[in-house]
Length: 272
Image 1 (cartoon, rainbow, N blue to C red):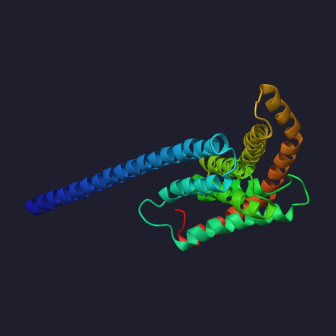
Image 2 (cartoon, rainbow, N blue to C red; image 1 turned 180 degrees about the vertical axis):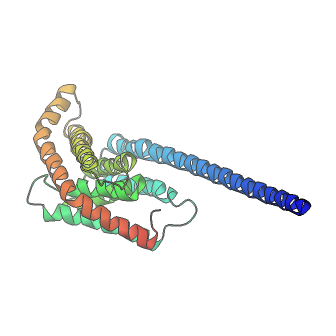
Image 3 (cartoon, rainbow, N blue to C red; image 1 turned 180 degrees about the horizontal axis):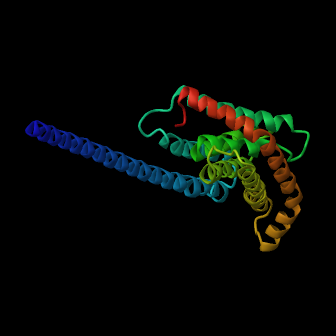
């Protein structure tokens, strides 16, 4: 009896030890996979940032300095091309499915429709709010391409011109930054306040400054600091109206749109 009990105890120890070894091995494998995934995301984010923050503005500047704002359609197409590359980086192991592309198209259509619906109110538009919400829910790369395409497509109705590439970059940059700074869990009032504060800053400090800078370069050949200061001062009232509109639409659209996008992502397994 004692020998049998002793043998049973030895078998139990051996089995338990083997189980512990397998658990530890599985945990190490999971930790290694998580570390590799974080590394891939970091590399993807760096490449996306370089393309969006270096190559896209470089294309805009080449269009202004070398082509004298005459080839803005070509510049716009190049911006769309550069914005597609980071977007496809999200799907490094597979191609984006039609549902994911359709979701981007729907958000672009919402932005265009929102701009058209409030066309009678200067600068009071939901376009920046929709781009921000897209970046928050679908990621920074999707936010950039949504902003760029929204500006380009809406200008087919409101008028294309040398300002189009600048608008594409400005709105795309807002969508890109919103995806970096926020996730889709905007459930507390504090996070909503921060999102609205970002929206106000982005429309005045990013979109407004970029478009006022474009105005100076297009209006004068020999620019001076005084021209920039005058343009920024004269454009501030319109930029503040745009900021107020962005905050207003973020307050009323963030929760329903994020909930709807969240259900679509969960149901169809997109942007995960």
